[in-house]
Length: 71
Image (cartoon, rainbow, N blue to C red; front, side, top):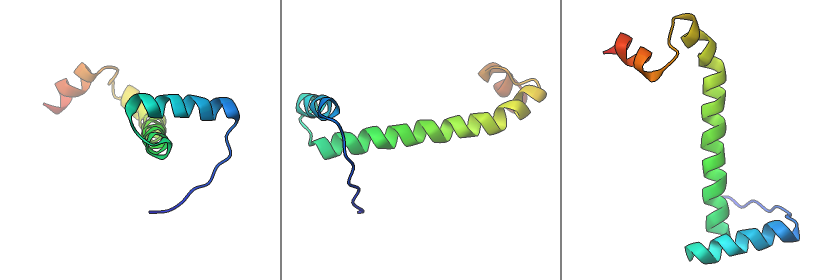
């Protein structure tokens, strides 16, 4: 496991501490989970930006459109 050191302001640290206490987790674990979630969302956004125009070009505007053509 790697180590990442970041500086955060006092308010962000207090918010992180509050969430960690509410979840009964360490601040590190909460930060890891939030970072992991953010990276997944960013990856999905990039995929959407890349494939979205191609999907629209073939008429895939909704999940129903995709299922209709794939099923």
